[in-house]
Image (tube, rainbow, N blue to C red; front, side, top):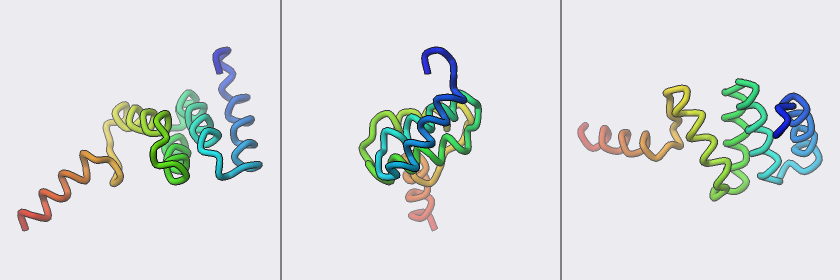
Length: 92
C-alpha cells in the first residue's frame, strides 16, 4: 500500500479473507485499504471482523478508533460509549 495502490491492496486482502476467513491480519489490512479509499463504513466492518476473530488485534483496534474519531462517531463496542451507557442506566 506504500505506492498508493489501494484498489489493488483491497482486492488482494479481500481475496485473502475469502481464502482464510479466520485470519485477522487479512481483515485488518482489508479495512486499512478501505479506509484509504474513504469507504469508512466498510472499513469499520472489516476492523470489527478482525476484532471478532482476535479481540486483542492492536492494528485493527487502533484503526477502528482512528476512523471513529475522524467521523466523530462511536460504536456500542467503544469503551467510552459503554461507560456513558452504564452511567445513564444507573441514573434511571
